[in-house]
Length: 172
Image 1: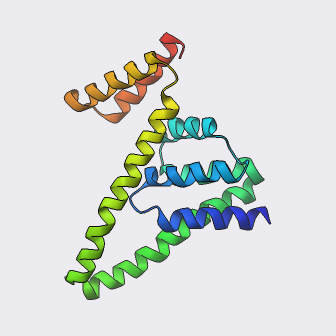
Image 2: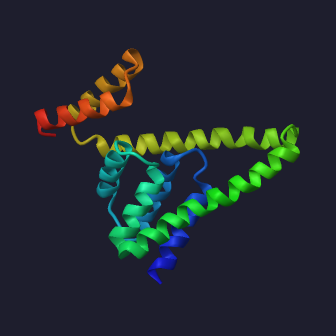
Image 3: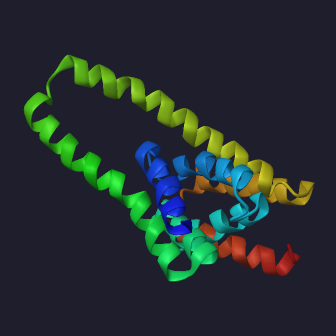
């Protein structure tokens, strides 16, 4: 039963996570409220780790949650559940775009989805910021990284490594 539940919950997330991995975050917050699979603090830790490791955020999180909840079978159920809607939708969209790509109705539909996706990503960013804000020191470090990312335009790996070094040096 747990395998079906993991598949079902992550299938729903995969079905509506249009816009990338961060869009899954609001759905994952919802899972913390309904199941004891992980806490919001564990979610914050997962986001930090999985944003700094290779692979898609949503896929990594589904695999981890599935594995920690029900072992390898749970990892497979959650990951397949998350990925299956994307595969189905991509095949359908490819066929539709070939046939109706220049349709104003389709363009309007996609134009309406973009702001909704932006709102979900912003929600995820704000929710992650609230979880990461454990002290004024963390907030100031986060703002310093935000300024550096904006003005220096370094590679993301540099910021991840610098963040790890700052965490070790300051014992965050």
